[in-house]
Image (cartoon, rainbow, N blue to C red; front, side, top):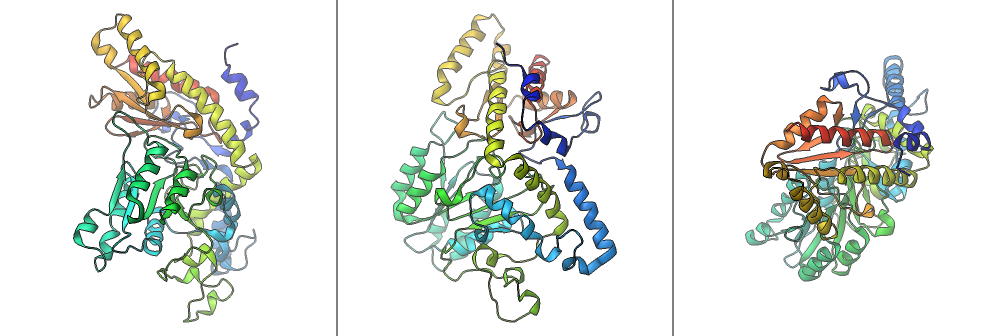
Length: 464
C-alpha cells in the first residue's frame, strides 16, 4: 500500500508541536499566492515559538514595571540574574551531560575561542589541531588563529603546519570513520586537539563520535565537538562518547532566534593548565554581587563564563526547551525525524532528476539512474541537469538535513531552482555556487511538506 503523507500526519503523535510555532506566510517570504510557507530552513534559523513571543512580552512588562528589580524579584520566577538556570537542565539533557558541565553564554565562535585558549596548550612535540577541511568557516577561521598565539613555543614552520585538515577520499562526499581514526594513529603524539562538527554543516553527515573520541584519547589529545547542527537535531551523548569539550548555538534547531545566546560543555575535572579566561559571571553565584577582588570560580563549566547572558535572547529558547520536554525529549523527536527525512529521501531519489550520490553504497544506483536517463532518449543537456544528494543514505549517519548538489556544477542552475521553489512557497537555504540544503524539522514540518517540496523541486527542474 502506497505511503499516505496525509494519514501519516494525522497519526503523528507530534502533530501538536507544529501549532506551537508561528509559520511564515508565502506572500511575506518571496512566494506567490496565499497560505503558509513550507519552511525547510530550520538548519539555518528555527521558527518562532508562540510561547516565546508570550514570554518576551511578559519580560517587557517586567522591565517596564520593575526595571532593575527584575534581576531579583520576578513575577514569573525568571529572575534575570539567574536566567541561565532556566535553560541549563534542558540543555544538559539535550547534550547528554551533567548540569555542572554546561553553560549558557556568549556566542558560538567566542566560546570556541575560550575553549581553545584553555585547552589548546601546544608543546614543541604536541602541537597539531585536526579538523575537517570542510568545517564551517567560523570554526576554520577561529581555530587557524590559535597556533600563532603560541609563537614563543612553536616555530614559524610549526605554526604554518599546525592545522591538519581531514578530507574525504577522492570521489566521495563524506569522511569515513576508519580514515579519521587512521589519520590520528598516523600523526600520533603530535596531536594536541581534535575538533570536528558533530553534524557536518554542508553535507549533513552525522559523525560516529565515540570511536573518534576514543582514538583521540589513546594518542593523548583532547577531543572537542561543534554541536551547532547537532543540538536539537540528533541525540547527543557527550558523557557517554567521552567528549572533553563542545560548543553550540541555539538559533537553529532550538529556535532561540537570530543571534541567540550560545553555550558550551566542559567535562568535569578537565585540566585547563591554569589558562582560564575569567569573568564576573563565572564567579560564585552566592557572592557574585559582593564584588570581591578575588575570583572564586563556579565549579565546572559555569566558572568559565564571562558576562551575564542577554535575557531577551534567552527567552525563546526557554519556550523551545519546554516543547521538547513535553514532546518526550530528543529521542522522540529523532524517531519522527528519521521517518520524515526517510520519506523525503525516498521522494527525492525517485525523481527523474536524481543523479545519485558519490558514496560507494549508492554507486550502483547512480549508474542505473544514468543508464535510465541515457536510454530514455533525453537530449544530452537534459541528462546533465539534475541533482545529487551529498548527505549519507544511512539514516544513522544523518540528521534531518538533506544537501542537494545541483548539476551541472557551475551552471547557475542552483540559483534558478532555488528561486523557483521560493516563488512556489518552499524555502530551504543555498550554499553557492551549487548546493541547496533542505531540512524537514520534526517540531514543525509535516509529511505533506516533504511531498510538496519534492513536487516543487520537480517543477523547478522542468522549468530550467
